[in-house]
Structure formats: C-alpha cells, structure tokens
Length: 228
Image (cartoon, rainbow, N blue to C red; front, side, top):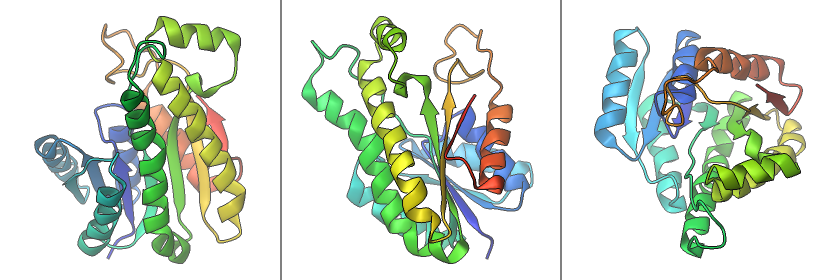
C-alpha cells in the first residue's frame, strides 16, 4: 500500500493544493471534511488527475470521531505518513458578545481535533518517519496591530485558536523530532486565491505555491515554521 496523507479540513484552496502536490509525489490522499458529498466529488477530481484519493466525512471537532477517522483511513488507504491539519472555525467574531460555546468549538476543531489526530496517528507516523503539517495564520502572532485587525475582521475566536495551534506546533516539533517525526506549520499572512476568505476574488496568494512550501518543509525537516 502507498503511504497516505490525511488532508483534514479539505476545501478549494490550500488543502486541495496540498492534496494534489503530495498526490503527484506518490501519496494516497484521504480528503476529510464534514460534507460527504463535497469530499467525494473532490476525491473523484483527484482521481481524474491520476491521484489515488478517497473522501471521508468527519466532525473534526469531535475527538472520538477524529480517532475513529484515523483508524478508518489506515484500514482503507494504508499507513499514515503525513497529517495535514487545515480545519478551522471562524468564530466567535467578537469575544465580548460571542458565546463561550463558539470559543470552545473553534478550539475543538483547531486544537483538540488536531491533538486527537496526532495521538491516534502516532504509531504510523513513527513507523513511517512521517510528518505533521499545519496551516497556520498570521492572526497567531502576538502583535498589537494584528490584534486590532482580528477585531476589525471579526476573527477574534480564530485568532485565539491560531495562536494556540502555533504553540502546539512549537511544542511538538522538538518533542517528536527524536522519534523521527517532523512537525511544522506554514503561517499564511494574506488572502489565498479561491479560498473561503477570497470573497471578492482578489486573493493574492497562490495555493499551489503554499503547497510547495509545505512540501519543502516536509523534505527539509528542519525549521518548525515558515511564513508565506
């Protein structure tokens, strides 16, 4: 069986480009999102491009469901060599008015779901000398101007989650290096063409170039983060 990459939180931007890049490099691709019909169609499109792919439906904020997903992917496609975590929830917009349940949901998807996937994938990642790759965002940075922008953009909950997620990557990078597992993130600092955030069609960042950055991190296995 081929080595497998799980693309968790698949959509039309970065994650699809990552799926195509790693698929062209010989990986079997597991596309994961809540919408079963959408990931099935995306997997078919990858198949038309000569890439072995399969869609899986999962609530990535439910840790039990995430663990079951990892086991299902392993049984269906083979050992997990790369985990790409692209899932996020952009809520709440404002911490002073948003519900605490919204904050919790954002962290469930962006942090706890990621950790559940990491823990369940560890046996495969160790045996494959694999990698954990995370799509980060500039909102993670501790900077007064960025904090102002997060408020203006209605992305306070997402900023909290991305900051926590970036810390998770920083902690796991040295922790797992000794076991042959690479951990890193790409901090995306603009609007990606064709993504859910590109509402006006004026996105400037090329998702294929970001996917190449992920591939380079995966190959070099050195620094824990790259800013794009």
